[in-house]
Image (tube, rainbow, N blue to C red):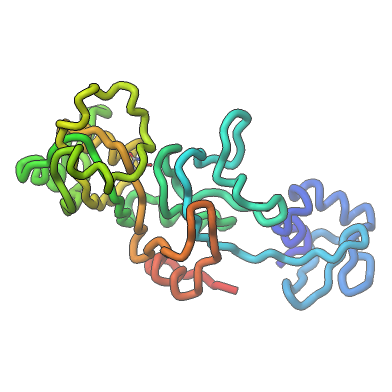
Length: 268
Ligand code: URA
C-alpha cells in the first residue's frame, strides 16, 4: 500500500494533508525519514511514525451495535444525540453507519469504515433481508397480510413494495396486552383517549428494501400505527442478545462472511 494511503486510512489526515506531512519530512518508515508519498509499505510489518507518533493501521472494521431508541443514525448532529455518541472519540474514527434506523427504532445497526461493504450491503439489487419486530395499534387481518406480502403502495410515486413476509405474534385489546407492550417509543400524542379498547397487534415483518420509514408506511397503508419497532436481523446476521441497548462489538470473521456471501472481503 502507498504510504500516503496508509496515513490517510489511519485518519492522520486527508490524502492532501498527509502528502504535505511526508514532503515536510515528519514521517518515518522503519526509522528513516521518507519523503516519497507513493512509496509502497507493508501495513502491520513496516513501522510508520508521524511527528514521532507510531501510526497503527486500523484495518477494516465491522461493528454490531444495539441501537437504543432516542438517537439518530447520523455521523454528527448539532441538536440530537447520534449513534456515534455511544463510541469513544478514539473508537469512532472513520466509522459510519450502514443504512439507517429511525430515531425511535431500536435494534441491530451495523457500522463500518469500509465503503465497499456499505455499498454492497445497501445496494437494492442484493435484496438483503431485514427482519423487524413491531407493535401496532390496529389489527392485521389475513387480507392485510396478503396485501403486505404481495406488495403494497406506500404513496411514494405510487411505488409498490417488494414482497415481504409477515408473522403475527399476538393480537388483542390494548387493555389485555398492555403489560407486554414495551414503553411507547413513538409519538402517541395523536392517539385517541380510548386506547384501552383499541386492538393491538405484534409481529415480525421481513423486507428486502430500505425505503424511508418503510415498515411504518407499509403498516400505515393497512390502517395500523406503529408504536414500537425493533430490527432483529439483517440477512443471516441476528442481533446478539448479550448486547444491551447502547452496547456494541466487532463482528466475527464468520459473521462478516455470512452477511456478505456475494462479495469477497479480505478480513484481517
Ligand atoms: N422502517 C421504518 O419505518 N423505520 C425504521 O427505522 C426502519 C424501517
